[in-house]
Length: 253
Length: 88
Image 1 (tube, rainbow over the protein chains, first blue to last red):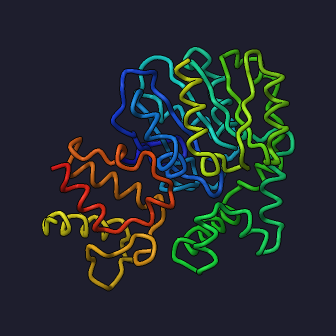
Image 2: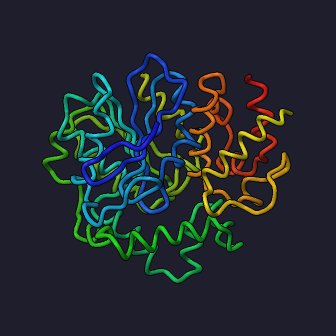
Image 3: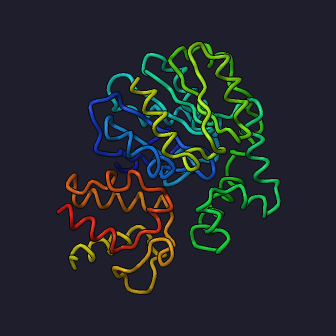
């Protein structure tokens, strides 16, 4: 699917085939290193065998436009309005990292349009800041070490992929309010938590710095349970098969 | 292998890479990762072009399901051409 008009510029939307009769599923990626490829090459193809699956690039990421501002979860949820406009009935949502925050913010505003929610490695009171600042304030070696394996190799070899990644990161850091928005953001607001009475699965990585944030959020939600999988923050890469199976079982159960 | 499929996919790669298209000719042995240094999101774009051209006959998602991102990106153009030909 092509680019669609969002409230702050074009949004790149990808429908993953073959689809099926199940509840439509929209999957959101995480900030900075994420884009539609995060789910396209991991959980999406398997999940798309039994339901329609839609992915999109968050604003400032992938092939979507990079507006100068509006990188808090609530404003980013405005984009999701445009992405799901043509999907009938209730939908399921899966979000990784900050994408999980966006999914939850949208579900709180549209409770009747959501059936189930999966929050993978959702950052809470400290997670978003800790992750971002640790990444940017670390020395170059630690920055590279924090990258998923494939990207690490590309950076180490000075490849085109690495140059493009760093160009995109620099653009986000210097030409948008993303870092400031993250810095001023706190934990998931109580109003969002109380509006999300849907069945929620919180998936955390056993060795991730976000794991405690996920557990704490789950204890505040009305109907949430926690699943721990072996791996770190990039669970879709560290535990692709287990995460795919866990998401599918929760959505189909 | 089909020359016309290779020709079509070469055109799609040019569309994806734009002015960063490599100078060397694209062959069956050209590697997405090592020769084209393609990004994973550019592979998604290539998949969209493949689907736009050949439609549902070419089930790219079924093909990549079960392969890791590193497996997919280490494919050659020939792997993709062979897969597309097997669907047509």
